[in-house]
Image 1 (cartoon, rainbow, N blue to C red):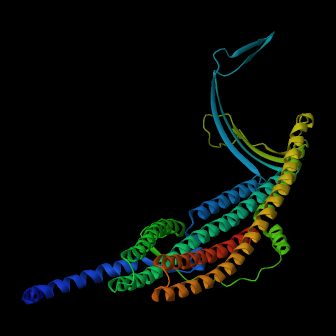
Image 2: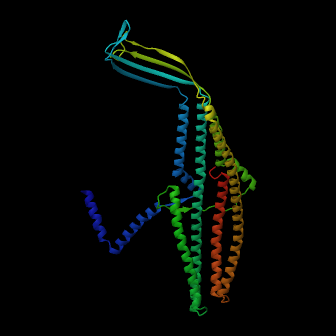
Image 3: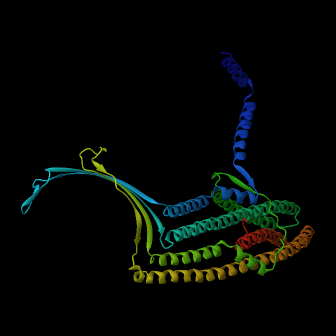
Length: 455
């Protein structure tokens, strides 16, 4: 009752507040509510944080891990084949003998009208020598486990690069939008100045329209950039495993030139690190083991056997003194499918061809990796040189813009010249930001080509 009275009092007091004040309070409360929601949907990430988050939430890596688990399971199954085999069986049968008398000349043999039989068998077999087939099976599946593990590392490199690529795309758009905002502020000042000159009769209306048209073009560019930002932001959310509506903000990316080693050192590093080459080495070993396994099928198999039999001729299957026997057996079993001496010949040839293919494939992959490293290296060096050139061009565009600003203020330059100078500076600034992003992405591409992106 106290709570109800308090609520009623508060409601009554609120109604006594003037209408405009009440609306202001409600608007502020609504703004706080939606503001906190919007804040909860924003997230600022560094590149390292984005890579870590993406690798943790990657569905592709989870699928790759399941392939490792499957390969380990196959390896354990191969080890189980070397264990002894055992079996047990029990059978009951009843025979009816309508014609149970057999005449043997002067003598005759009479059998009972019916007979019961209970037969139980327990056997154990352990292969002593099988030509090494079980050992080769374990070696083969162990190699496949290692191949699957390298697949995971290869997937990690590719996923990390995809995240880096998307992150830099977002960085490009954000930086370009920042340049657009700065340019809009500058052009607004020029429009204001042109309008003042027009009112004083110093310039024509066309000069004012020229600056306004320039502003519209910059605004159109800003709309395109915002649309691109939304698309890239959504794609990056998918890569990182974040809610679709999360708005991502990128941290400032360091653009200082990184120390670059000679090209040969990157090639050597790639040839020693790249997972593709390690996988080919494992596949070559797997082909070698496969050849040995096929050759082992030509050899005989020796196994130790042991058996226990339970024979009971009564209708009662349970042991009853004097009505059953239990023979025990132990021995060696030698078997040899010598037909494999000529039937496996072509299998061995096929396995050797497959091994040769792995060697050839490694050579192809090696050449491709060298080309990839060289192209990535050259692209990075070109991007660095481009940044230096654009920094020079911005300095020139700034100076050109400063001169034309002064000339326009003194009515010695036209509005077209002034707008063109502003456009050149605006374009040079965007080009520089894009070049910095290209250089950063090219560096990470070089790391990926070398195999060091996630290491």
